[in-house]
Image (cartoon, rainbow, N blue to C red):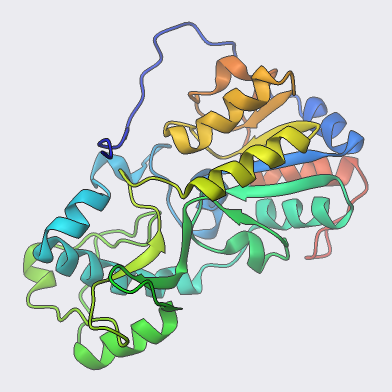
Length: 298
């Protein structure tokens, strides 16, 4: 039985204070073997909001859950109408300095891997290779009946044809690609079926309340086990899907470093939390290590 998702978290203990000294991050990277775990906060500078930071979308938006999507046809209609609109914004997003720095660290051979909780594909767009997409990707669509996989851009074309003139103005776009629309704006939006079997299509992402595939979890555990240290970038670690790897690393005696402006659920497991904007922080570390980003920064 799947559990309802954890959408918020309140500290129940006094957590260690944050610092602004980037030396621990630079030292870990210079040693090598760093595993990156990134969250929504690394993409905010690309125009994609996060859930829980300042102005985060959870203050006005409840993400789609797996339970609602699979049980309610009207919920699916709302989701696909909103996601179809939000997809256009996601398609325009470009990697920022944080993504470029991670890719540069990888090119230099300082990283053992990258795990991302994001579904936006921006790490890959910046040049990172072998990224483990913990929660899947909005680039793909899967049929819940036959399992057929297809590209999101093809679904977008079909939805455009099925809904000519659909162009409402969204109040906001959320980290999962879901735009804020009223029921009136959604209207009678037409959802299209799987072209193979006529079944229900779902984005190839892990919704809130849905389990991450066990083989993906085990692969990430192996990456943590083989890493020298874990560097968390822009994640509140509120949901267990990411927090478990922080706990696993700490239990294995591996240093955990977190760069996030706000408190995180993993702070007590970390040797340090650096409270600085990610793009500037990682660029500063790259400069200190003499590493060029792909925008010419050295």
